[in-house]
Image (cartoon, rainbow, N blue to C red):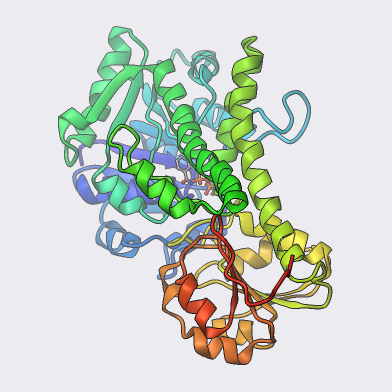
Length: 460
Ligand SMILES: NC(=O)c1ccc[n+]([C@@H]2O[C@H](COP(=O)([O-])OP(=O)(O)OC[C@H]3O[C@@H](n4cnc5c(N)ncnc54)[C@H](O)[C@@H]3O)[C@@H](O)[C@H]2O)c1
């Protein structure tokens, strides 16, 4: 074996990232450890803990060859030459910076585990998304060991998107590797470059100073989320003016300076990263005495919340100002298509608001039902989790589309119309259905940022 790589944290990032490295570098031993024994057991089984297109094949090729999953964090650290840290860095929910700053307790714990279990120098790679200048703290903690050990800290943020993780890892737009600008730092940087160049063209591997690298990840997510909030803000104006957001965003996106990606109006962005990373950026700006910059970015999150709330208000207003006792079929609970992940999904917020209005929810999702159940655990109200879309829609007054699963457009809407209560409503929170066709079947159709197609006069 060439070198031994360890990844601490076997989540949505650690698992797929290490599976691809092991697949592409058969002469490296790659170990992935986690304190969550259930998760590790799942990685060792046929039923992987996360759904990601293409992931099964990659894992099968490498597992037990040069890819190993374990709960023995200490043994992993002892053996490793290079340690990626990919633990969760959620928003801090207590004390100073609560609701904005990053909660670095999991992160710091790994630093202490590394010191305790190391008996030789190692490279430590920040894979988690972290506040800019975290490496300073990491260096200080790792440097405080009394064994005379030297650790080189690198920043190698992950840009994969859930749902396309394997594609993104196998052919990334870029790989970013930040290092301290010291001889030892640059030498460590080269070790990581040598791994990625096994399958990533050298010109796509961008080196930077470590602070730029840390900050780039936060800013990338903030800019992506900003595009969604920008187009969503205009969707509200479209609904007032009979302009059509699909037409507007398509025409805007044809400008090569703007580009056509991330311009789809929807109920809003979700996922574990966007909100927490922007709030973290906001916190950092405040911390560094830049309140105007902080407010600028905070607005991206506020616009997202506005869009979710607006969607629910529209449902209530359209359904004669009451949804109490009405069955509403929720199509899609994942925060986006091709994942079972429901963290920060707009569906959580929308469902909670609908339940507060005493609607009865019938939730269907092709991959995210188990997570949906966990998200709504303890929320008062009547909720059913149903594995068949037609069962979910049976007797429903409305369907609310909350995830852009491609299969939703393929369903037999004539059949759905027949089995629903009348008047039947569809609220297309992702603009993925054929609205004209639905209207002709008999539905009252409410897209985002487009005129409603309603058979009922003055229904608002
Ligand atoms: N999910 C994404 O799409 C994505 C994309 C890019 C970057 N990121 C970033 O990557 C990081 C990880 O995200 P994720 O979605 O994989 O999180 P996750 O919650 O799915 O996984 C983190 C794992 O770390 C484990 N862990 C926590 N503390 C530990 C410890 N001391 N020792 C061993 N294991 C420990 C947890 O049990 C968990 O399984 C975050 O900083 C996130 O912001 C996420």
